[in-house]
Amino acid sequence: MSTLVAYFSAEGTTKRVAEGFASEIGADIFEIVPEQPYTVADIRWTNPLSRCNKEKFGKKDVPVMGKVADFEKYDTVYIGFPI
Image (cartoon, rainbow, N blue to C red):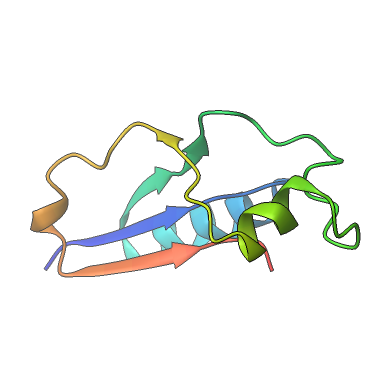
């Protein structure tokens, strides 16, 4: 059984949790990196005009760099993201 932990981290907290979790369960890890990096202003969710809110409410896909090699080999995939 193969397990993958994929994560996006805006400020580093999700990265630390994902790395610790993947290490603890012996999973592979993949960082989801947006093609256009987020600035502090982009992730200010309290601003209705911030990039993160425009993407969320506009249901926009965010292009990312890279792909998971041999994704089909994974039986379980955990996805971590900021909340």
